Length: 480
Ligand code: NAD
Image (tube, rainbow, N blue to C red; front, top):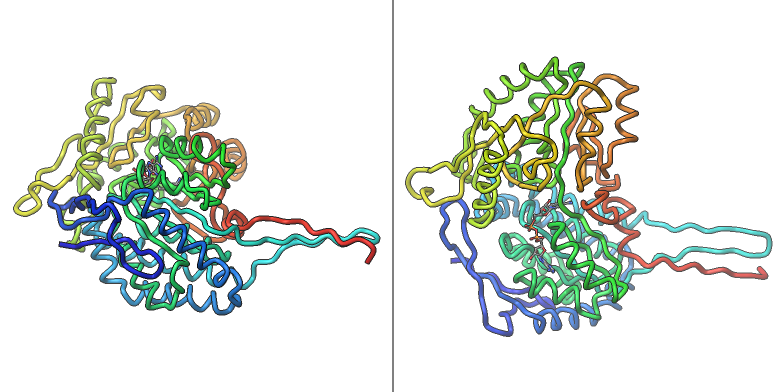
């Protein structure tokens, strides 16, 4: 059994209320540990520790801050195998995904912002007789709240820039996948991070998470998760005038034209549909295919999906693992049932998979492809966030654009074409924060990341993240 504890002021702490939650292994459906069911009193303790550490951390010479964050990055890579195994156990994702995507990216997040802090600068403006310059100062204590789909990857995507900018942090990972954040605490101690600079508190969203949002000592919140929780956080934080970055849900279109590079498109679309069991906010769940290519694409795509090996997440040969929780398993299956009710034809998958032996009670769903649904139905409008995609044909560019934009969400969009004019037209007109053309999930950490419409507010990544985690002040000096 793995007993997870809070990490506050450089020490491991039990929750003050003495309450714990069960932590499940999605591969087997069994409990493998406990996590603190923290409440406002634990958050208060963490905020006090962070406030006390702020002067030391924010005034620390940049090179020293850099060295500590680089040591965290190195510590993550030194513990790659342990962290990857923990991530796979906790989330049901395959060990291969954890080993090659999640954990290396978490290390890179620290490395990227450790070096960025050495180069971060601000503007100055000159006019006759006066000089104005911009100060970008750390905000103080900031909060980070992250989801379960890319646990350490997204947790560190918030923590690393917040710390690099000189803030102290109170962060909460998802209660569904807390294990690697717990292991990160030990890495931070070994890296020499001063007590109180980073505090990791575990627990439920509406209790521990909301307590971070409500705490008057927390000046900014960076949140990644569902649109529903994002709206609740915004409702609480807005009257307190907290700075907010909200990275929310999506229902991303994948638009495929007949002039695309077919093999590359097919291979990438298999990944963009089902990587991490479709539980990546950037997965393309609505696939639109130009009619002359539709039948060929459908046959090849479905044949390839049928070959996917879903199995034990710890087996390097498994292409797909388990979905993250019983709750999520039931939700995804209910959407497949809804798709049938709405008149969809299930071309492959469409049911839970029963595994042998120890995996018998795990939460496995066959990768599912559905056709024949109108764009406005709930299956095509609501975020399912599982191994389920729909496919639809289209006839013209304008029809494709209108189908793609017909959504309350606007996180990312993928376009497959070799037509330059069309590429530029779609890139301008697609209502999304991120557009990929002839690729998917290719991330340059210097680029802005975020969504439009109900997919969020604000941008993370590169200088945008450091600007979010700093307060901008203008100083004008006259008569000089
Ligand atoms: P969720 O909103 O249920 O939970 C996310 C985090 O918020 C968890 O740590 C949770 O404990 C906390 N939380 C929940 N309610 C809260 C509240 N009222 N106050 C404070 N904290 C609260 O989301 P999830 O199910 O963990 O993750 C899946 C969602 O995340 C999907 O909608 C997905 O699209 C989204 N997501 C978005 C991005 C992005 O970059 N836009 C990336 C990954 C995931």
